[in-house]
Amino acid sequence: MRRRILFVDDEPRVLHGLRRMLFSMREEWELAFATCAEEALEKLAEQPFDAIVSDVVMPHIDGIELLSMVAARFPGVIRIALSGHSERSRIPNAAVVTHQFLAKPCDPDELKRRLGAAFALRALLGSESLRTATTKLGSLPSLPQLYQRIVALVNAEHFALEQVGELVAQDLGTCAKVLQLVNSSFFGLRRSIADPVQAVVYLGVEAVKALALFTGVFTSLEADFGGLSADALWTHSARVAQLAAKIVQLEEAGARIREEAFLGGLLHDAGQLLLARAQPRVYAALVAEANGQLGGAALREAELRAFGATHDRVGAYLFGLWSLPDASVQAIAWHHDPSCAEGGVMLSLVAAHVADVLVHQAESTSSDALDADFLRACRGDRRLGDWRAAAEGIVEVSP
Image 1 (tube, one colour):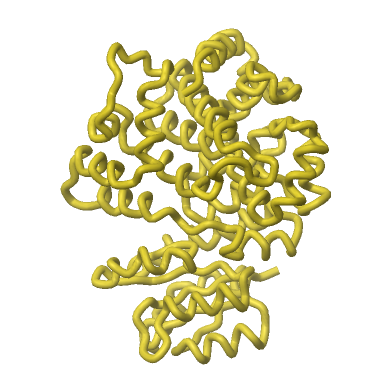
Image 2 (tube, one colour):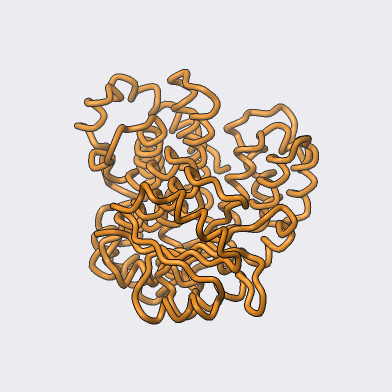
């Protein structure tokens, strides 16, 4: 079935250019075009669309207002904003209604990649009702502003790690997590670090970006929510992230893969919060039914019955929309059942699966076992002893 995409821009020449650039996708995508917000809303009301791509600056009703209306009236539609350099200051205001931003002029290959990835990840969810629920802003958080600011700074022509540290220092939640992680036993520092700028320099930009995402997604979880404990979620997620990165390090892979594994490990259970936020009472009952084993198969089976999808798939859907690295999204999506992963298996998935199971076992929070067939296929069974020793060392002291 072809995906239906609506493009909105008040300049007809821009729409003509998009039509020409995307002609090669005609077998997979059905394209529609509108020159104003009113026309776009009429088209959306007439027939269903999978995605809308709108310019930010338009007369009468601008792109941000339009996407706000789409979020309210058609929550299942993926919303992408096109913005020029001069409109970048408006991005923080648009973040609550926009899944992704693309720069103008729009690169057709980037647009194809973004939309293609978003559509592929939607297939992870088997329930149309859950797809709709997770795209409502009440249950699907927007891309955290601090994360956006860090990315914008890093993408600038000149930047220093100290500048990232100064941004982190302005956000109390992320600052606390950065300092907590850098002073954990995992890093084995001889002295404690109290300066967030020093912590950022030590951890590196990618780890700090991951922590900004984590804090932004989990910001509504102050104590207990839908049967979930904020402290328990943070402790487990941080341990899994550290162990996943350690496994990659033990396998002597590069820094980029280590960063992707850390990010996937840190965010692997974020889907639990998304489901709990959507229906806290229902999720609390599911946690109770699973005897509090948040990493066990019993909880995932209960999630599937109640929502039509499990937290790993829901989390992958969110972070895929946010264009996180494919390796990290794969790790989030399949960390419970890596044998089911489609396409080539990446080391970050191996690390996330092993780290999650070993940390749960060390914490006595799940009785799930490692996927033995998967580990044999990727020859991970030969390295299991070293990985288990690393897990025991990390779990000895909470991060």
